[in-house]
Image 1 (tube, rainbow, N blue to C red):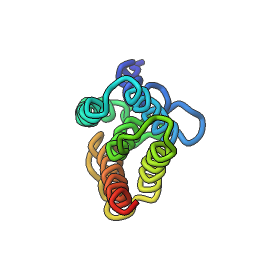
Image 2: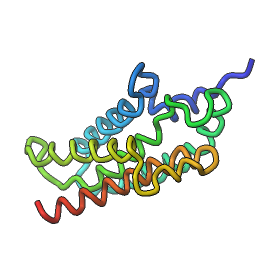
Image 3: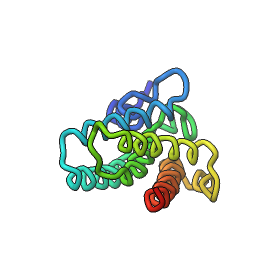
Image 4: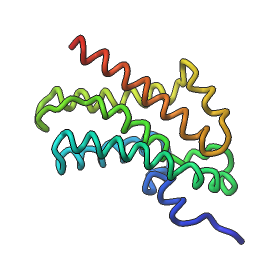
Length: 162
């Protein structure tokens, strides 16, 4: 009996966070946010921005085929595949301003990035749902990428006024 590749499972389940028993997409976004916070502590802000952008592109491109392969085992757009949530929340986190780790403003923006991404991802307004009709891994990834972009835009507007 054929089994999914271990790498595919590790990557696409957001480092196994997609196996959480309820709300796996939220747990994938939590795991991605925690990874980003580790990066915030390790890198200077400009380096973090570059690393985040490179990870968004790399994880998107590397995950398309593994998602398509996993759909053969787990069905179309399986709930445990959360790499799309990982990438989507990283897009929103690009708009978190450089602030000291201990500042309330920093944590408000981190929470806002997380919440906006999840809201757009759950409710799928403004053409996000249409992205799901793309074939295979593209459909899985693109709705969350668009959710992340919409969240980023809202955060940019908020930064201008607050």
